[in-house]
Image (cartoon, rainbow, N blue to C red; front, side, top):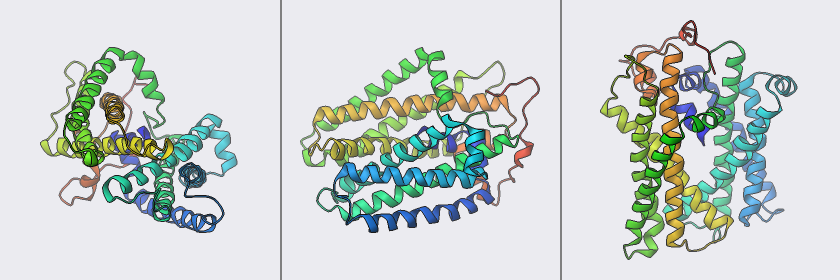
Length: 357
């Protein structure tokens, strides 16, 4: 889900996809795929064994892939044939395979895990309701993200400076360059996840472990992720160009979203994977510890990278100060009557001599 984090945390990507006309059009685009997914489920529920988790996940991934193709085309503003020619097979393979199939299946597992852990509504016992939600919600979310990615691609081709495309290529290039720092923070995150999970396992509350683990582990992981984000920002600070301190409000907001939210998301996806793909009815203590360590590692590395990338973008392009300081509350700033209007996209320029990677 790095693409989702990038679209909301990195300042220019956030600005591009949260512009008021874009938001209005996106709401309209998101309506149709959800209704289509509901119709497909109603038609196929008596034909396919959708009470089987793997069948449901496979269908959800296929429907989400089709939604991703359609939504990307809406955001891209080109025919599919022309988009294939301009964007290339590699980008389309990433869009369909990762944003469509893999991301859609992850979100289906998330929905099933939420219903199981917090509502006590187990898909294996009551398949119809959870199965329907596990089709509609992922399809709608994939549509939103694919539309935003298509819009980013279109604006980039039209000349808008987009320093970071949200496909993870920059992350893969960055990790070898900052390997000691990544290992340091990754180790800290793994220890934090293991200790928080182990502390709960020491309590004699076996039946409450899924709920308690899903609450405490994300809170601890989110706190480490917030510190990692600030450490990532500091990696790119140069000379006298120091970032201004974050406000307590911006720190609290970033801790809640995306840190806690996405840590909870990853942890629940792993619970869903364990329960419905591997069909493990009762997760062992070692299983909870492994999920906590994995969640901590993933979230902390992502946060470290995003902090570094945010500082990189601030040095590379001229970004309004209010966005530089609080990219995570920019939506609030846009809607606030007391805040200054955000500048037009074309006002964001690249200083002479800088090269966009």
